[in-house]
Image (cartoon, rainbow, N blue to C red; front, side, top):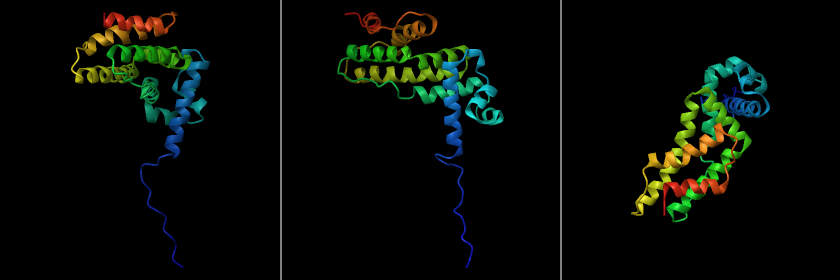
Length: 188
């Protein structure tokens, strides 16, 4: 009987070892951010927590900053739903409230603070995803033929104070406070 040949291997193995390593390393980062002091976040510590060799982490991500950017991309993509109530004011109020709620989560806040602390591309990843969400709300309203603030003005009025308060202060991100940000952006 002729020997059976095995199917050809492909470079992409969804759910394979690469996916398991990525999941384990991401989980290790999240655990370390919530369990340990920020200075404990090093590649060797992350690798040990994930149960992989440090060279695997260095090879794939290169630095803690790049790893945090990957975790941020995974975490912040699509987690805040862009509301569509038919009213720009209501959409922005709901968006600001949802973002404030997300930033109040201790795990999210730990990741955001770590990203800001590294000063790497993770901050850009986080900012770009939030900016895209805000742009979607504003562009949709503009498509309805209504007057809208510029995206820059919306970022300055909504995202900047939300992130500043979350990252640099101990003040609560209450729904009422989030709504006041919208009233400053869209005075009646």
